[in-house]
Length: 114
Image (cartoon, rainbow, N blue to C red):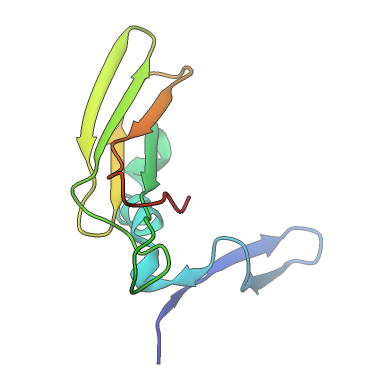
C-alpha cells in the first residue's frame, strides 16, 4: 500500500526499457529530493543544484527526515544558509561549479543518519 518512485532506463543496445527497483528507487514519501528536480523539468536539466535530506535518529523511528535543521554551504568565498523543509530537504539552485563544504546544525541528542 505504498507509492514508489521508479527510474526507467532505455538500453540502446537492446532497444528496450527496463525498471530497476534498487538504487535510487524509493517510496514516494521519501523521494522529495528527486521529486523537486523532476518537477522542475525541463529547466532543471540546465541548472546546477546542491541538495540533500537530513535524517536523524530518534526513539520512535530510525532516521526519519527532520525539518528546520540549519544548513551552511561554503565554497569559493561564498556562503549559503538554508533550512530543511518538512521532508528534511535542503536545496539551492544555480550555484557556481566548484568545491563546497556542507555542514548541518545537528542537535546534540541526535545522530545524523546520512
